[in-house]
Length: 265
Image (cartoon, rainbow, N blue to C red; front, side):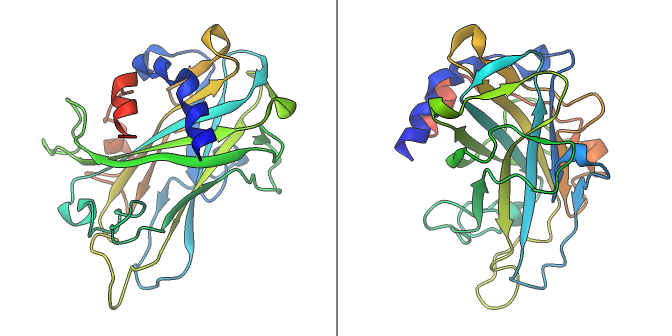
């Protein structure tokens, strides 16, 4: 894990730029269950919260704007937003699912296993990547974020590091969509004794950015916009204030390097 965090720190200083500054053919996609580019993407997940079994898979993917043959990692940032207080309680809510002492401390995980059935979405690292959670932090939303009629959302930020050794560098170009990482959320403690409040509350999940690390400096590429024919937003239980359309009104804000470092203190 220390190795992953070191890799995460190599070039994340570039997150100081706003995602809106990136344009062109590049972009990121987010979908439930399977890669967005595989067709018929699932952008909303409804769950009856009547079972503690099963998992929900979020698939992160991207298309870069340039060709690179030296990609050694991805730095992935997702934001989770809701206007509900029951879902957002850091220790007791359903979305308190990673840190020690929270209600569902073992319910969040990540992996680099691409679906073997993919025919469009390319496995960037050919199954050789190692991935880990750098930070899962409930935090105040950046200024200007709102969902619905003046509601200021509760907010978590998930930071993920994906890396390969120098013997397994990836080659990417702007003609394909590439799988980056899976985010797995299990259904533990959704019902019955010891269950956590907030499972049924609507949530917006935004794939804020994917930073392709390729040796640092000009070789790296921070991708922080949705693909023109895709979406970097999914919803849980129908989303907030009208679903994905309302969630799309929430701007993606990349934090400064200092703010990212503060997540590890």
